[in-house]
Length: 420
Image 1 (cartoon, one colour):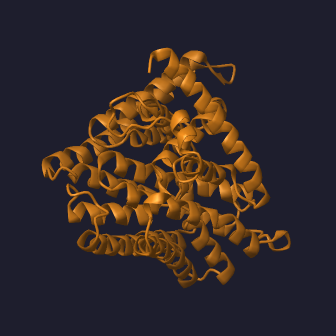
Image 2 (cartoon, helix red, strand yellow):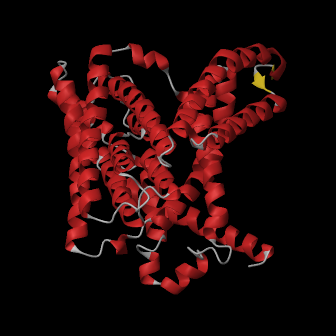
């Protein structure tokens, strides 16, 4: 493909992806599903699982895919664009991260977050041990330890940004249930991302490299909050004029985000680490309000759908071609729901919450969505998991997220909306 053909191909792909996401979104809205869930489903529909199955020639023509990389294919330009969208999105998620939530309802929050990490991680690690011993779902270069750690992380993650948006859409953000779910998800995801850093650092069986990854990540966090954040706070008087962020301030913030993403990727972590931490370090108030107001609409409307499309192209349901393989997929889904949803429900009940609120917390904590897709895409890209296992985990991510809205609507119809 020459460069002009690539540009034309890319523009056509964007148009098809956006239209498909919007059409699926309109249908999903009738079922009470948020747009992000629709985009997850649309990404799968555009991949080989449906479009490629119904019209393989058309799908290959629109999304040329060459695993051998003998020609420039969709992955060569869709992947970096998707990473750009992820970095910007996690930057805005970091800016929305509220540490004050962690101090509220502390006993219930700690119990729910602990249950939401320990139980699914244990189940995921056990399933990984079984799959590693009895199947070929992990590539040969993946060690048993890495396999167990990775699948454990995949099971215990919660889609923190999607959970927040579901809670806001249901007007539950001021309730005890919503507060506990948001705080527990934040703590659990921080733990999950830390474990993922260990997985990526130890994948090459080099403990020194793993220590450099973890040490580099900790040093990065310390530098950002101890040195960079005070400097940004002091800089505000130069980059904020008339209660608005100047163009120079906007460029400075974006440049810091990209430098953070570059550094964490350089030390063997992932771009999302650097972007999220940099967002969390941004001073609240005018800077955060202007950044989110200018970045979020473009990211949510354009760049995130490209990531979902990229994930969908890697999701090949046709690989699940036997009863045995589908039974493994079902086992993963059941373990995910039991390990996360049931464990968090029981933990919330143990701390004295009502059964209705406890079930709601379990349902919310069970949403995996975008964060799960980020993690399994990292695993596929690094060669930790196979295409087949990626597909199983993608199905699990979609189903567990899809369940949240209808179950919450059953628990809390308008007449039963909790007051606090």
